[in-house]
Length: 485
Ligand code: ARG
Image: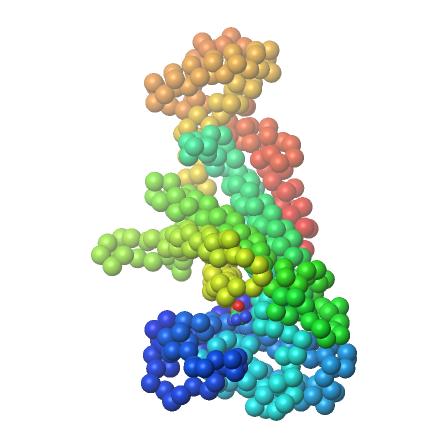
């Protein structure tokens, strides 16, 4: 997928590896902008300012943007048809070299844009040198990142949909499976496991909405802004926007090259998705602990201990919980990157890419693995039921019962609270007290009380939109299946 692992043949060289690869090599070719300078930058500065080792993954998007730009320049008679043909043919060669891994990246060419331009000029001669007419790397890079992010968002939204489908299948299977619902991690009221899973379905549904909304603001064209002030050539920005599938233009040239709010917004969406994943992860870890024993995860999602032979650890959810911090950190990194930057473009913005790429990669991996993991959850319904029978989970139902018999809710609450204390003193659940005992706390209690004190009675009574009654859960699943399609 476009936002996933690096395409074959794009070696990622980072940190010290990238440095040592270029050390002690013969003199590097002159930089594209070197005309103004009396001496070349030091090797250290070259390495410090280069971005090619991480922005090379924008190559395909860079070419798409360049082709749309060149075709517009030709249509507007800024370059000749012959130049355009040479550019198109050169780009085809470059594309083939990229895909076969034969493209030679050079640190001296600094970034993905200049690497491709240098190769194009080698292939197409002066036509290659004309490609950058009416353009700057400032509007070029903003365009590339937006194109790349748009693809990434589409892929991630589809992945979220797959995870939701997994949740739906489990929810359908467990629309009647009773478990204790918790508040403050204390047993609160009975719910069904299906209802609980559907809560996550809803979270991810909002996450998808957010991604799709964010996409609208990503999907605007910066090209034409040039360095910051626009260009004196007679360009047609609408034509470029249309060719690249952008929904509109960035309306102000200074804003177009300088803001990265679209990337920040995406990282905020991603951080929220991961936050939701982290909540599910935490619950999986708890449920899998023998203290709960609610679920089993298939062995393929767990690992053992090198010292304790009995261990089966929920590494996958734990890692997802941990990676949530990493993605939230990327959001902070981008916010701090943008903070107090004067308009317009500043080189700070080159630092947007690694956090952005890693956010999309981490999210993509996590969503893929959770789609399988959720499908693999095996439920111990008996353990869930036993836990629901332990914490006086139907106390609210007894209070509601008394209210329906005429008692004010606060008085009913008080009467049931005393009954709970009595049950605690006897070491049993509220539902296990006999009729005579219950009547000591309110004479309104009748033989019909046991209908509401059972787990099934409690569940069935929450029969309204959004409630946990099994028939409502089944209806929610049905509706969700339709929405997902
Ligand atoms: N590699 C640069 C970036 O990612 C491209 C834009 C460089 N522009 C410039 N004026 N130095 O932001």
